Structures are given as structure tokens and as C-alpha cells.
Length: 53
Image (cartoon, rainbow, N blue to C red; front, side, top):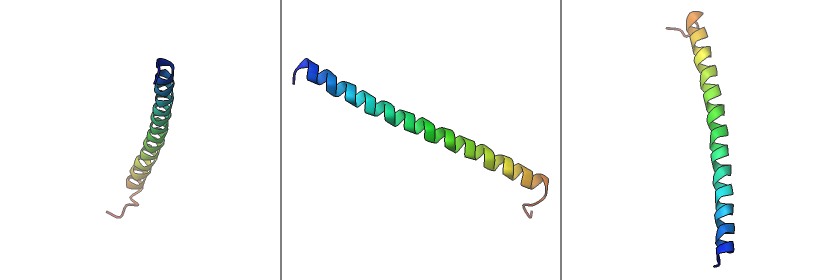
């Protein structure tokens, strides 16, 4: 494999890795948003004494 082919493979691998990182960041943001929603819902339930404790 010559240098040009090697660089092409490296570039493709880097692009795929970046896509994976972007996907993970997007999923992480969604999870954090949902955690905040459920946390605030739980606090509201406690405030309104809906939890049944």
C-alpha cells in the first residue's frame, strides 16, 4: 500500500470515528434532557404529594 492509499484509509477511518463521536454526543444530550425532565416531574410530584408516601 502506498502512502496515498494509506492516507485515504486513515481519512475514511477518521471520518467514521467522528460520525460515531457525533452520534454519542447527540444521544448523551437527549438522555440528559430526559433526566432533567423526569427529575423535575418527580420534584413536582413530591411537592403536590402525588407519590403516595
